[in-house]
Image (cartoon, rainbow, N blue to C red; front, side):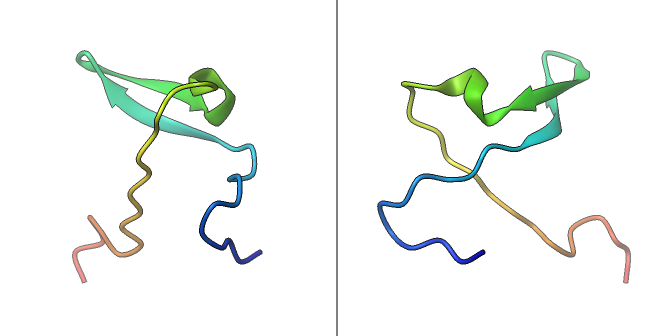
Length: 47
């Protein structure tokens, strides 16, 4: 699925590091707030 500017992102769930521990986060947890998503596809792969 390709997203274009001003399109809504699809719902997803992921792990994130927050306040000293890893926690699951859903995009809907931030509904009504500004969110910046950064993807690093090869980060931490030690290639």
